[in-house]
Length: 248
Image (cartoon, rainbow, N blue to C red; front, top):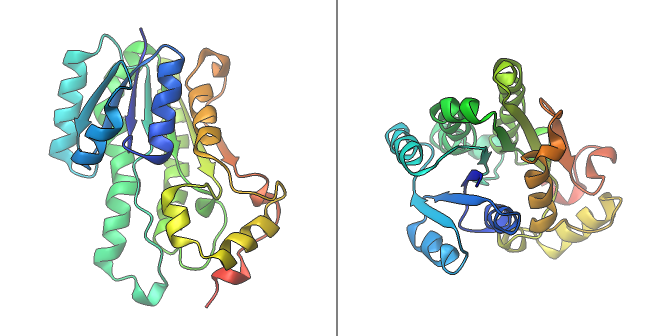
C-alpha cells in the first residue's frame, strides 16, 4: 500500500486531499500543528496516522521523519500544504510578521522535503507543493504571502532538477480563490463579487477540485510530469493583475 504524507491535513485542502488519497487506496500520515482539529478530522477516516507537528520547527520535523521511517513501508508522496494566510500592506508588515509567514509557507516546505528526501528517493515518489495564484501575480496586501508562495514555486523546480535522477517528481499547484472557511471569513461580499467577475469560470473553486489535481500529480498517470507550476484557478491567471476591490 502506498503512503502519502499530507501537511496541514486537519482542514480545507489538506483534509480533502487526505480523503481522496484514502478513496484511491492509499494510507495517509496526516500532519497538523492544531492537535484538537487534527484529532477531530481523523476520526472515522480509515487508514490514517494523525501526527501533531509544526513544520516550521526543525526539531519537530526531524521527529516526524524518524516516525515515518519507522511506521511506513514506503514514502510515496509528500504534499506540502501547510501554510498561513496573513495579508497586509507593506507598511504594516514588520519583520516578525514577515518571518511568521516565511517560516511556515517556505521554511516548512524546505524542512519537510529535506527530511523525507531519502524515503522519497527510495520509493521514486512525488512531491506536490501548494503555492498560490498570489505567487504568480502580484496583488495588494500580499507582500509577505505572495512572496513566500513565489519562492515555493522556484523551490519546487529546484527539487525537480535535483531529484529527477532518483525518479522523484516535484510539482507545484497554485490554487486561485477557493471556497474554504478562511476565504468565507476574510472575503467580503464585494471581494467575492469582484473575484467572480475576474474569473472566467465565474466562481470560486472547491477544495475537492484542488485535491483532485494533487492526487493526480502523485499518481502513475502523471509519471512524466515534473518541475511544473500549475494554476488551478478557473482561468483567473489569464485575466490580468490585481482586483480593484482589494485596493485601499
